Length: 392
Image (cartoon, rainbow, N blue to C red; front, side, top):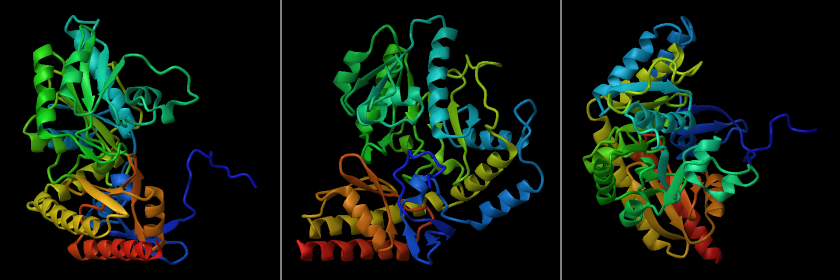
């Protein structure tokens, strides 16, 4: 029988029926420690009581009305995001890809609004991933994702990630903005250096460009700050967020300074579902927890503990693990053996992780992970590596 679902995913033959905290329970009864977190989406783990209560309470009242009307829950979430960031304006959507599309439109509209309509091009970086829409794929320019989809969308100039000299050489009179992930996720857990991020801000200020951050995967507390760019002590002009923002509920947003958003007036952008009462109620519940006193400090402490244990394992099993990289609870194991094999063996042993580019396995536990669960995960990795080494 033909599967009714379009075969665009190479799905693992594994299904889950429930989750609790950092654990997932499969339909066959097996329990898994979830250090994939829905690809950095389930920031508060599974079935967090506060989020469940908010969702069910709102679901009994109102789901959707459209953006023809005021939505108090969305207004509250936008105000809170602005109060804890550089931003002064927020647009809600349903996904990270949509948020990136919004950033691209905002950048072009900004220059048009300010009498520079020729400025339409955006500089992006090798190894980037900004989503699966045609424009987002064109921005990232990964041939593996573009094959068979015809010519790419114009308007993007790609340079090497981390190379400020190449970046400056790419700036022209048509350049509108720079788009970058402070920590590349799909590209292999590659953090930008503080110097690089500060250099991007300086270039944008010098040439009158907008600095656009894609914090879809690295934002919402994953690095130990609410947003990853805070570690560099600089701010973008606009930023895309999603994934952890909804804690598992589809919710994205792009955020901007008042100046950057000046061209986004009534009718310039829209979304049928974006920012509806149900989604933004969940977003507010997630933010309630992340903004609690001590929460982000605890993320930083747990991240240091996890990284130390992973670095010890990499040092002890150099024929399997080459290095640890990343920031906060967005870590990557650079593998010597194929990363897909590492992910499969860890899964068989009860630990879920996510492969990425550059032969990296992503370690993305929920932000509410406990040290005992970190110990459990590292124990699984250690036993897996030990058996692998013995069989070599």
